[in-house]
Image (cartoon, rainbow, N blue to C red; front, side, top):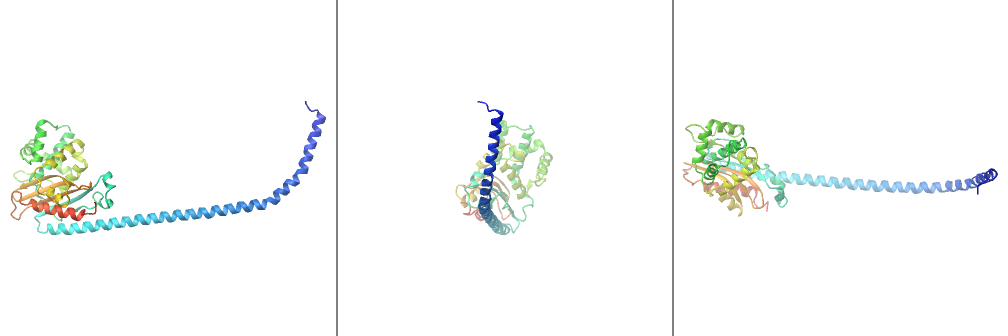
Length: 335
């Protein structure tokens, strides 16, 4: 039923009267409660502030502790590296003192998967322990280690589409690396010319010239180390992973194993070596990539001559140097 105008006036006036009667009561309640409400709010704010400060303090303390722990670990890693390098350098200085031996060592580290299982893995980070004898940059008779430079050159030619794995090349490579036969290497060198191969070697930043007319090939332990670093990492002329694996497989099969392979195995059973030897007159050389059972890898190059060496008589010396180097650097610390 609809209300008339007169009724609306009565209702409206009644509501106004009710509001006037209630206002003082509500205001009094609010007035009396206000101090209590503000007190509670103040207590809450103080509680939040205290806990926030405590949390921040705990967070800062945890962060400081973490930073201190990391700094301590970093310091320990640096000290351990310095200790290893000092011991290794002292030994290399001693064993190469008469100038008839040159040595280059480069640690490759381990794969990410292997690193997780290795004690003090940070110490052996790639390149962190590189150590060489003072004559590592002195050119020596390369003997058959020069075939590593031929391999690098041919892989570079393959990248340019000027070399392929024909039956002849496949067999030639096998004989050159595994049996250290000279025929294939000499033919390729004659075919491309010494100047062309030397130019390639120079561009890689390796000792040059390796090849000279009427002279034996020469190189340095440092240059062989640099070449093997590229081979181990599938870089530069070896960036094709299939070719890299093929060459490393041949090097693991090479038949002269009394140098670096023998020494590495004597230091720790189960160690694997992919290397290339060289022997000519009184020169015995070995350049290899060594893989320990735990996955750590390193490069070692040892070039020797003199002391009435002949045939393979210098390789036991290379084995002895290898065993000592591996023991100094890795010992039982990575197991």
